[in-house]
Image (cartoon, rainbow, N blue to C red; front, side):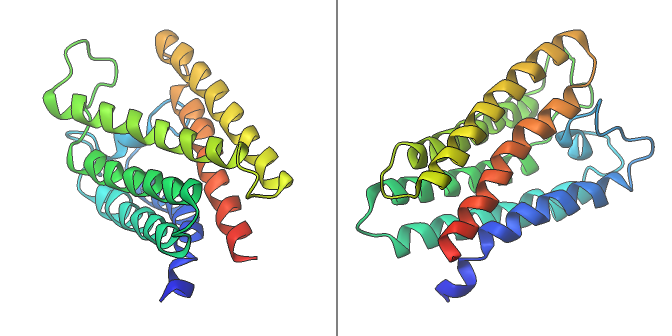
Length: 198
């Protein structure tokens, strides 16, 4: 059972890349640089139902299972248990983001209640995978190489999140910076998962 669950972090890291790509193929003229990933599941989008079905819901499950695995295989190590809790929270918020779509216009000044819930859940997702690698960074339990890689992922995520905010203001390529920011977090999850298996 646990040997299977140990691979769910890797599976989630790979799944999200293919899931977004596949959903985008059913969205005419979708731009990965100008549009957010969540626009695939936004109100009125061609992939409103498809995107959460192949992305948010299975991904949320994989995140939750990996968090469960971390908690149950490291019951005597609080830092890893907290990382597991952060991963479960990330999974739950992934479900919430799929269930509550964002508005069709990401620049709207009067977002719907669903969009507000979506945005707050996305923020919690961002924070959860900043906290998790920070724990690794400052925990002597982990190897120096993993700690350095974890610190790098946090720095990359924060930097690209800043670039995302600026790009959103200028309405240029926020989709690109969103992918780079979240990409740092997903890459961390992949590396962390591999380190645990090896």
